[in-house]
Image (cartoon, rainbow, N blue to C red):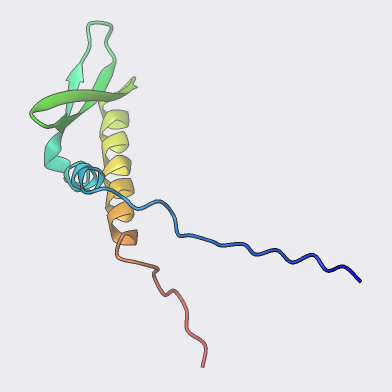
Length: 93
């Protein structure tokens, strides 16, 4: 009789570098964002990265641009929260 034996290893998700973590920390602060109006009338959201403004999204209204910034700030804050490890959402007794 022939047996086939195989092993597998699982590793965790790729580790986040310090540079990425620093970027997420900066992006999670609303003070590092701004909105500029473009010549075509659209509003562009920009993020300050190492003393340079990087354009991220364009919206038709200023309210839409503000909402995009709020969603981005929440997104990066959640990414930072999950770097601390899994979050317990329910415990059974």
